[in-house]
Length: 99
Image 1 (spheres, rainbow, N blue to C red):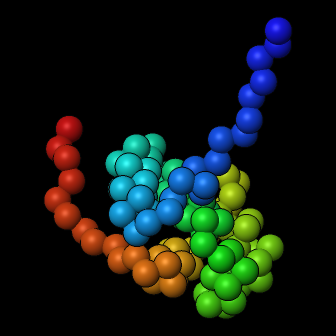
Image 2 (cartoon, one colour):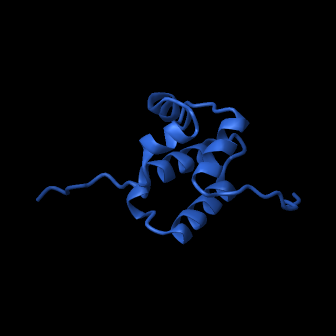
Image 3 (cartoon, rainbow, N blue to C red):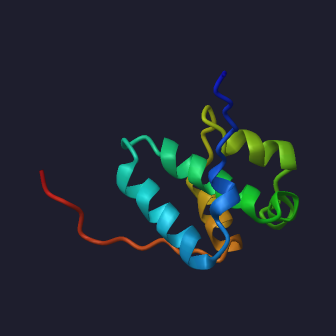
């Protein structure tokens, strides 16, 4: 008997605002410092909602938004702020951990 695997997609599990908040917080905490996990988390959140509507709201083409939030993307900070705002999220700065 062979094992069968299905593709796991975190966007399928972001059903509530609390799910979204906790997921994004975990990705921010685990981000290696290059924004890669944050970028991918925003992409997952966007896919869990209406990706096309989000692209229109932040005034970027759907393909441009997909590229910006991909693993190889490099969105501007302004775009990240527009995306967060459009998703109903806010960014806060708090004292970080000291090494």
